[in-house]
Image (spheres, rainbow, N blue to C red):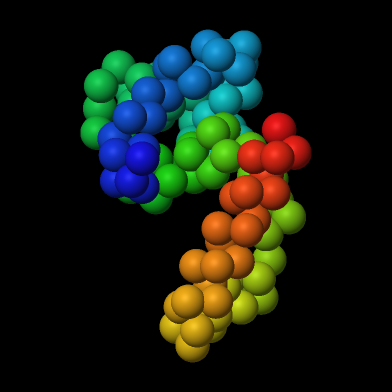
Length: 101
């Protein structure tokens, strides 16, 4: 599934229910208030950065507290300087994660 299609298919209420979280617990993990999250769940358009954070935290299960700015700089450098190596490493990491699950 392409990233764009994955983003479109993110339905916050369904993900929250599947995880067994209330709105405050669910939305606070991505820096959104309960009332803001309620509006998104009711159909208000969710900004792309919020949708991406939701995907990373609740779908990919990434602890964003552990991501450092330096890590992001290395990723961007690798993507720009050696895109083939970046793609290969990304593919290997996904395969490893699938194997672990």
